[in-house]
Amino acid sequence: MTDTPLLEIKDMSVSFGQGMREVKAVRGASFSIEKGETVALVGESGSGKSVTALSILQLLPYPVASHPSGSVVFQGEELMGAPQSRLRQVRGDRIAMIFQEPLTSLNPLHSIYRQISEVLFLHKHMTKTDARARVLELLELVGLGSAISRLDALPHEFSGGQQQRVMIAMALANDPDLLIADEPTTALDVTIQAQVLKLLGELQEKLGMAILLITHDLGIVRGISDRVCVMNDGEIVEQGGTAEVFANPQHAYTRHLLETEPGGAPGAADEHAPSLMSCDDLKVWFPIKRGILKRTVDHVKAVDGITLDVKQGHTLGVVGESGSGKSTLARALLRLEKSDGSIQFKHRPLHSMKSSELRPLRRDMQIVFQDPFGSLSPRLSIAQIIEEGLVVHDLGGNYDARRKLIADALIEVGMEPSMMDRYPHEFSGGQRQRICIARAIVLKPDFIVLDEPTSALDVSVQAQIVDLLRDLQKKHNIAYLFISHDLRVVRAMSHEILVMREGKIVEHGPAAQVMDDPKEPYTRALMAAAFELKADETGVVHE
Image (cartoon, rainbow, N blue to C red; front, side):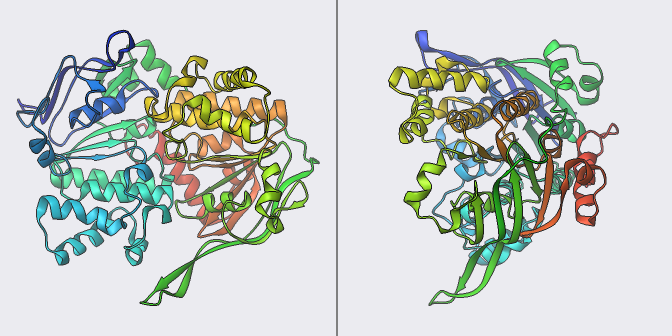
């Protein structure tokens, strides 16, 4: 520790709005980060973690957001109120940030090469040759070596985990002194989590880089952070050495966080239940085109001959590394992605139906997408977003009756009905995910695809959502296709588990058998990475 911290925040407050409508998002936060140190900022969704991080670089929208008090001193320089010209020099160079939602943070019109190289041209004034070499090096560092042949691809052509790794490569491009990582491993599967955390540790040791880690995953905090600050309702309620806080938490809220974790098992399901959703030899191949004439030279086999069956009232958990084809499989089953092969829903052939024939069935098969902010219209209020399905399918009666259904759906996902007239940008990442779940369940469907539905949620809310989904399944006999990289949640939700790798099924069977006695080496490696990564008492993160 040095006499002068790398970053020192004193009595920082953040408010949104003014007068009677003022919302005090952060109240008197104070903490510091030393050079080469990792400090974790933890707390439940909406506690003020991300707002605090964005305030360091003055990234909150003015005049909607204001700082009634506070100081942010970086390397002896006050950033609070600094001119934009100076802040632009610091951002992306000396302080870099990995944002929580990669797809909404990446420019949809620019290739990944252009976006990573942009920071090199801007801050390092590199030549095109040097920038390209650095981009290739960064992609290898973050485990995206396979993307080197796809430098001209756009962000939407990658999986959620791959998009997050592109964001990490951008943040590391200029070897920053401070890296602010806002949920950097949220979208990553467990094996890539371990690789990324190991990478950040190696870079930190090599460069003396400090890290401000914002996360709801307490296993990661225990493994890599030196100190931890616990936030609740905009205030830092406890801070100290990580080992000390975990072993002897002083505040009731800290104890609550440490004690809450998704657990239990799904309710018993009828083994003789009828098939609800099935597919046979399903394939989704994306062409790779090259040359002036853009001829197809190969294919990305995202889904390659998948056969499965989901029964009424059952949950099929789908696991696998990022890019294995999980989300593409889900979209194909719902006819949101072009595919080859047979798809049956309630014994009706979806694969041969026209769009007009599919529309009446869409009420009975819903999806909760991985990226909550990207799947919510910024122009619609929460009530309008949830109401949209009711209006399309002519449900709920009149306006007042629909408002009642919307209020009930929000209560079911742990939100206040009074929030329904607010807009998506006014909510935290976890709250936005709960809104997406409310939008799906308000239609009372028979089949729901849950694509990483808890990835953006803190641990206590994960447990609540898991309990909610199990209760809804028991009450309405809903079938789930549950996609997740968090195997604790998969264990708590799934009756059967399907393991995917490179578009193919590696292993498929009852959840207990796949989790406790996997037959395939890949599945064993996946399980080992998941449960060794979480809470090693020695503080070591395993691959």
